[in-house]
Length: 435
Ligand SMILES: [Zn+2]
Image (cartoon, rainbow, N blue to C red; front, side, top):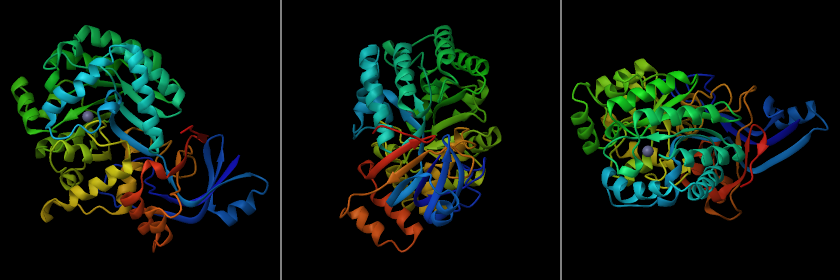
């Protein structure tokens, strides 16, 4: 057993509801707190003085000064795009053609893919991300390399082969039969192995035929507990393209629903331009949206209608959307989510608190990924997934923490000023990751 001592902040949401923002956020604080961890699981929590007195002789890991937070949970991030972060100045479809897809095509070479996977997984861990729903590669060989590297990383990774059969460069296209066969084999080898799970991943309806989407639904139903992830309603030109390709479907969300892909284990990224009936369909299905605010800003996609999702009862979590997004840090994504709401007209604006931002980056992600029984907060019974934020003495972030007026104020400073360079240690289920 070990005792982790530090300033503990989390947003407890029970085992469901973390991503349902109609329920107000509670910030729980132990300014000198401790967690007793046994076999990677939190066995007790409380003020440090009381816990240390109750368990004399246990190893104490002192995570002071700084803040000890639950590990971040990224619900939308692309493994093949780590090396193309920063391609500015283009809207979505041009960015895909000119920045993302040429790099994604290079992953046809498994050796190249392994190098990218290594860079990608290091980027997640160094940013304090302990769980992620990862958009994979179009190449099965690249996914084999990725799952192997992910298993060795210690991170909780849900990922799958990305499939498309139209509208992209030819070397990235597959067929419904091949997608099903390769996906089934990758799922057999990875799903439920250690901390890995499989996600059926049609790239977006824009690049998929109805037959391919149907094969995705068949794969999802054949892998118990598998996730489904894709993109939706990101950009006006993309939405128009989907409407033209699927004239018999009511709308973009309807394309996924009509092909059996909208359910409680579905996570759709972006949803910047949803219709009211699409929000209602997502709420009814219990699916979740991955809000990716730096990507939405960088690609000029628009301002995410947080309040409309919340009012409709759609679950919301956070995604970095690397490489459309500008890095792995969910602290930065949280700040950008806040900025986006500040720039939204008052009648549609959702004022986000620092506690809301922490919840988006932790408990909401755990809920969206079906991991809320294991991770997302520091409740007794959860696995110890944690990040020790310890800024360098004299840095502006450290000055801010030293002069913070409250725990909420300290948390706001973390979102305003914290970067991956301020992270001293990261644990998943009590295992310290090599950073
Ligand atoms: Zn994306």
